[in-house]
Length: 149
Image (cartoon, rainbow, N blue to C red):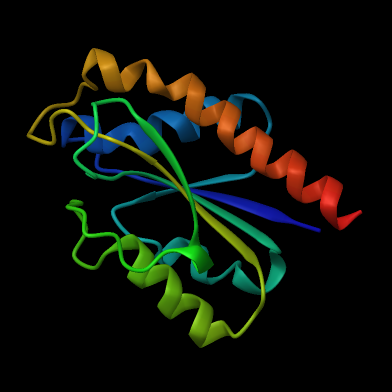
């Protein structure tokens, strides 16, 4: 059973770059990560080979900055959230699942941004969420591997 972690974010839009910061931490720990920038197209060539997809992104749900959310794709409709991406991440994931018609567990691990404006820095509250996101991703992978073995 194979997994892929796709981390979204713009390095020039402040807290929107949280996915890229998480990608760096996960890669240091030896996880297979794709830093996608602002869209999921780099994942398309790997869809056939994976059974678990975890997407990490900034997602504005109106919560406290730095709050971390874990959403299972099949359990949510489009999140009425603002992201810096043209099409919502959840909509894009659902389209990808329909096109590939491949069953896989898919999760969105989102972080509430504080500031998504031109900047190359994360705000302190969002920077503090990096470790929590890494732990959540590791837990999802561990749970998946235990349930599939």
